[in-house]
Length: 568
Image (cartoon, rainbow, N blue to C red; front, side, top):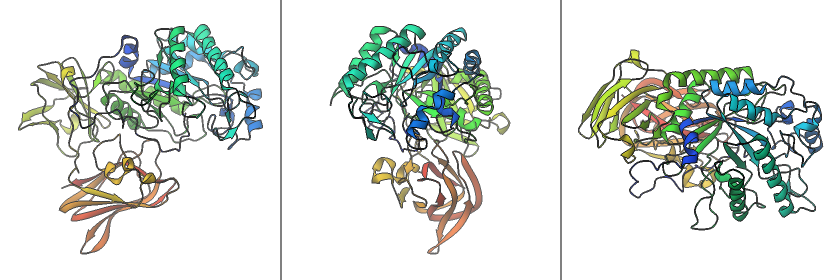
């Protein structure tokens, strides 16, 4: 994976829906991608000898851990409690349809018995072939086994770049010879551990890898197994966006890979967000664990955008998946057991995802996922179809009205779910034939400005915090400790609460306040120490035109996905 603290581009900014009229209905999946699309959820596993140090896999080589020490970690790597069947059973219990293992990360260590290198699991005290055992266990558990494989290798002498982070250069590299090594190892994986559900490439952003090499490697993988799925990072994927071989050429690979963020709605080309269950990809002691609500809503938002979620865990040095991470996965699986019909085997839409509501669809059914209730009702733009019936998943009754170009949903408080209230609408027509419909942002009328914007790039501007799109965000420069987001409502409005969502890759705000301007002076109406991904507070109603969120202290450059004043 890329360095986790890097601020990444929105996955679909160049290829998502633009100003043109959107096509009607999602594009059908290619037959070999159908199983992957139906699953909607996969389990990502980042593991290796570095788990003994608790630092990041690959990236900490030559940084937090000296190169010689890092490269010697395999000599003491002896995960005696590794149980491939337990891993596969946990993935199935979580509701995942596939599992992706880091067979080789950027550090070059191989989790299978490769004949092409001694830097592998076969040359540790453990000796067992982890990859082959897990591949067999996944098939027995009804899962597709998949291989993450890094294109770059900071340890191999023939690969031009080295640690830390690809910033050093090797004395006598030979990229052509290295590519033969890369292909030889892939052939081993396909032969010894196949069939593979997909190959998840990474490391393509470095200069030695070219689009031409990517196209050739894609063809090579398909020649070894015609049914295999290959992600876009086989080519020059530009940080998860669709990679192209040359200006005007089509994307390389079968699907896009936004990282540590939820991709924007895109139903003409498949995509999958890879997101950690904690903060670090590899295991880290006492790492911050995402709540069940965060995990469920992340999955739902991905499905609502017509994408998959690849949720990552980092096993411990002894071979076990950390108990608290395992328990969170089982909780997620429990939610899917009850509500999976609204996620699995669905397509995103017809409404484009918003901060409060996302939607999924299948046949004549539309599933409305209400993640935030601003009041007693939710309003959505009307559909070019008649709603013939409705039901609340899990029990209860929804009141649904189609009137004056809008749909109004109401669910009694007793029937609402704290994480996701799902209302199934039955239409008189095929829901998949409907074109995407935008949901107006609650604060679309307002203007926003900020004291700092990441690299002054418009894509991270203050307006992204109030656009109602959870796939965009206001971001600040790395190292920023204080920043201000200012909102001009155009005219005084009475607000009695606020909803804020920090970037889901990790909460950073450590102290903040919310102020409004009254009589030419700023007055504090709310203060706190943390925000997180789902902050919602009420305060004594105040009527004001100008408001500002002041971030007074932050562990890193603060990043806000959504900011909404709750008007009373």
